[in-house]
Image (tube, rainbow, N blue to C red; front, side, top):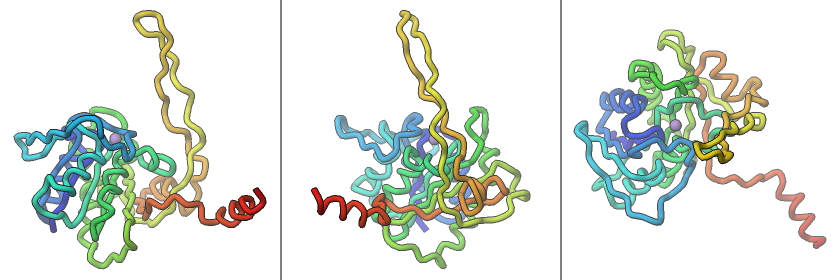
Length: 253
Ligand code: MN
């Protein structure tokens, strides 16, 4: 199996190294990742300047772009082969519920959606703090390897990816996998107000809101119970159950 790996924490991130290490046991691994952190870049593509991949000593390709740039580039002319699977992560921190809209980790997996077997986005819940070394990501990497080993039995509709969140605990304490829908968060915490060195007001975007819909069946719940949450995602954001209401409204305009 040939894997294309990317992430949004940057090519130097320990979560990416742990993922590459684990998947090398299962097949050929090619890494194309942003040269610096691009968390919360969602599916942004760089259109106003060229992208320049540089190969690092460990063989990873470093790109002056976003997660979506990296996978887009890799699949549309940069690589001389077609990978079987795009795997993104392992992200430093959760991508649960509403996080998936902003996530560069999820976007990298989504960018592979035109492939037959599209992709997996993997995040380690609770790993926001810097100072998490490669060993912190090894349990999550081992769980991803387990998922992929059983991959052949999975039939996914076209353009679907799996969003995977792993609780931060030793491998022997992780209770297994749970399929889950996305939960929801409350609105984000207030922005942090700062003063710059010249006395001007500035603002720093704050942290995501607390879980609001985190009951049984959600990704939040699965992870809090010690399970790896696995959520199939699609790019179609249509609110199907609102189509009729909007249709009725439009008729009277
Ligand atoms: Mn990130």
